[in-house]
Image (cartoon, rainbow, N blue to C red; front, side, top):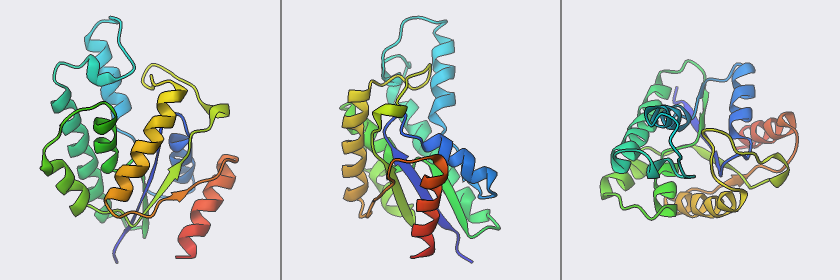
Length: 187
């Protein structure tokens, strides 16, 4: 049985984590976002010095930080093949790394693109910016305007790698999950 790998992407504070947590409560295997923990650790290493909206502005080696994210998401992708369940969900996908690097004007080698070409998700859902639920916190530091721009970068990056994105409409967590599961059922 081949496991269907479903990525849920979107800019900051669009509801990805809440959806992943609820899908997991419903019994679906889920891989959580890895950058939040990495960002918190990087900030703690600075002993609460002032930091900007982009964690790459305060880590010692931004390229190594991105490479670690890419490797972590690739590891999650490969680990999903071990699932006994037919569908696995991801809080962000491998192409998110490139979208954020493009947004912050950072160069990356073609090997980063190779990861996106080799490790393909079965379906990608995208959550558009939604100001009513937007909030910043210690690990999510972007403004709403940056979130709007990041949405475009994410959309363009996934399309570049051949994905047809399904946009999840605004609604309650249960309504959004119903939309996702209905789309998957109808494929």
